[in-house]
Image (cartoon, rainbow, N blue to C red):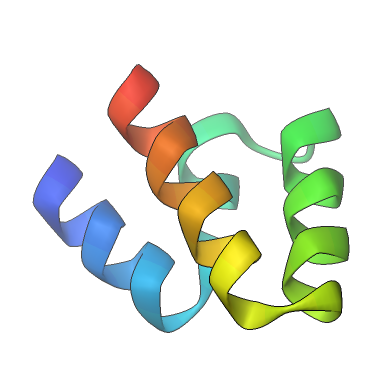
Amino acid sequence: MDLIKIIIAILLPPLGVFLEVGLGKHFWLNILLTLLGYIPGIVHAVYIIARR
């Protein structure tokens, strides 16, 4: 299941984080990072998914 979440995180980072942690602070941080640059959003999303 983590592999599917990582693929989703690469395509749409906030969705990957949402599937992992819900509407918490990490979700909103990821939206901000994705808006500032797509790559930081991906890195953060993969980190959140791999950490758990």
